[in-house]
Amino acid sequence: MLGLTTGIGMMMLVSAINPGVSPDLNLTSTVVDQPVTLEAHVREVFKDTPILAEVARCESQFRQFGTDGKIIRGEVNKHDVGLMQINEGYHAEQAEKLGLDLYTLDGNIAYAKVLYEKEGTAPWSASKPCWSKSAAYLAMK
Image 1: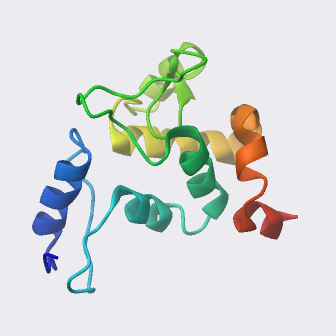
Image 2: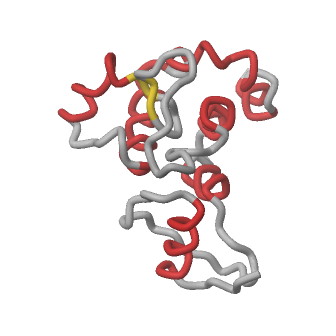
């Protein structure tokens, strides 16, 4: 395994794992010989709201882009986009007003935080059968 300890090296690794990752991610690590995965990054970003990491797991299996480099879209609703499967029909305009781009990893994550602060887990109720079994959800009760 590669021993990447710089933000630049980690960014290159995450970009290789997930094409299109925004270069403004602040990826640093003190752990040597452990590659940073997108899942690890998402869990770190959502460390204060771990239920959102579980939502990401259930909604997109920690993916923002498919193997073709295109943003992933929902299987049931093609208007659900990215890591957090945010519905562009309902949320694109508000995200844009906030200066967030749902089609980038950073924008998708940032808007999910805004949405969660406003509505809790309700926007992701369709995947509740998956994330409601997680330790993060059970700890919320």
